Image (cartoon, rainbow over all chains, first blue to last red; front, side, top):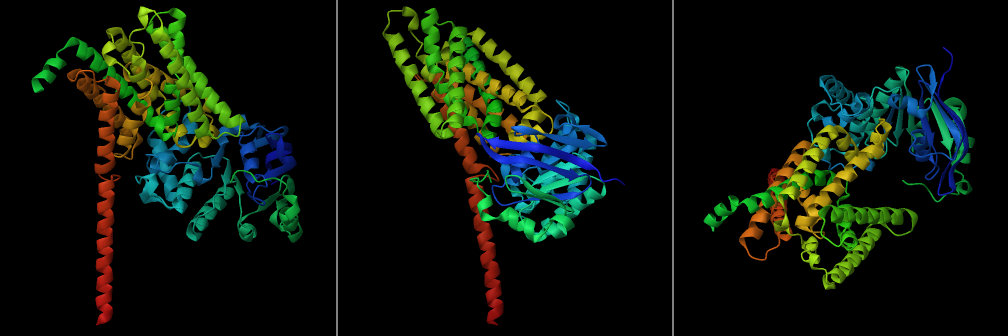
Length: 251
Length: 309
């Protein structure tokens, strides 16, 4: 099978208030692979993902998606892309049950004004099973631990039945057991030829968990299969002290 | 006393006013739940305070208390103020909360200046204009109540229609955007509802206290349930009851303004909820903690005795 590209980024420059955060970055993500985006704090990892998701408009550059053999812009394939934000980005005291939150993953497929139905509930419950939380459906979300929150967010993304998954630091602050569950699930997604992109902070586990790696620090320094790219030179280059000229992005 | 209340309930004027404030409470309870959960309830406070100069300028322009003109003035100056707050916090180094209190108090100050100026003028029409500060529900006419009822029904229907989208964007707006929903449409719909609710409440509750109507029912209702639907319905009911009871209190007494009475009743609901709700209440939490502590102490005691032998 020929090697396919899921996302192609061409000469992307992103700036906050005229200060470039990502500079002239070109890289591609292979379809059906598990890719880690690594780099020091303030390197622009989250910025890259947020630009790919159209939260931030780039100054220049193009992002081309390929979903099911069709080339398209982000807007055209929005519903094939699932996003898992950092779980600290929401208020967990919101009055909702775990199932309510997972069901939100179905909203995109439903579109405006349509209500969730039996089928959506069945899918949501199925995804809760997958993340190992079948008995949590009616639990109030404020009662969840950090790891459980992350798994609920992952279940919500799985309920989207997307082709591309983007996760922002899904392993931050979760326990070892949860880390294992999450990585197994992401691995299973790639087996179904889904593309999974993860902002990752732990260099120790990159080789063990991922197929591909992207090193970024204000620009894409190197990217490709772990075997070729995950080298000491590339790591040193990315984490070199004088490289990081920025004051740091939002955490 | 009891007879007095019964007579009141059969009094036409009271029925009108109570219906108006009741609907208003219902509406602001429902809308306020979303505003409070989005942590935007303070914006409602800023909006209502900064409506005052608009009311004054509206009056100066037409020289009469044409309600539509006054409310339009209120809406315009309220919107200008919220726009300025957003602009300030985004474009300058002034933080959001500082920008908010700064704009709120300067607009309110300007409003007081204009109001005082109008009161000193010779225009006989101005009498009663100051009721916008504390609210004067007894000035409510049947057409005002009709307006409130129509807007309330429309807004409540829209809440039902947008239920899924409101829930999504109140909980996780970033995720909502990635699903293909327009954040602008949802946010605009919700803001318009908040503005309309506040504007409708200005005449009867007044600019100072109208935001309490948004926050109070939501905070009280949140204590009793963990389901958004139940919280929203309860907030509506609490708002409704507060509206009617506040009107009742102000009708029984002499020279008791309606707005503050409604807010006092509402605060009662909030206090009771904070203390006595079964799971989140202060008392329930205390007793759960004490029980937990006792059982741990007993376990430790058993362990100790076991080691002693």
